[in-house]
Image 1 (cartoon, rainbow, N blue to C red):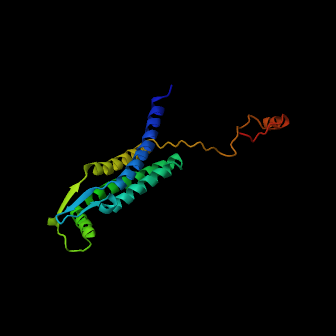
Image 2: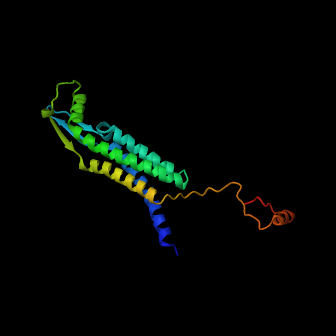
Image 3: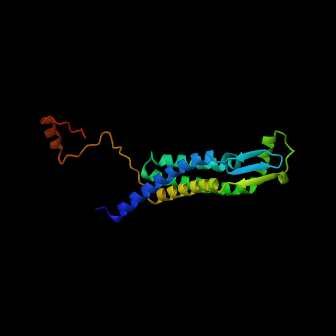
Length: 191
């Protein structure tokens, strides 16, 4: 029977990895889903994506996923370092995303001018901006799952590495056992 500590460590290990996997799926959906629809009174429409609204928060989300990927390749001491980095990148990306929400009107105006093809013709009064709550939920859910993954990595920096030392072998009780193994035809350096 597994101890409570082992079960908790196993659950946190899964949270760290499944949180990041969910974040990868949400990033892919978030890239394809428009956050804002822009309609003009002259009849044109456009859409604003996450990369157009806040490219810096998207970049930090991808960097946070890269930090999670580094936790898969390192020792348990480094997992804490990369999980800390992942958490800092996630919180900063979320903050930048919320800051960019204040600039929705300017980004919508830029999109409308791109659709029309002439700058200075469209004003903010000519626009109707419609946010897509599901798309915003995807982006915020992405940051939450990245944050859960980072916190789980900080609490339980476990790696499931099956790597072993290439030259690892059992230590014999006495030096004469090495000679005994050799005389029996056994390789004492074999694992």
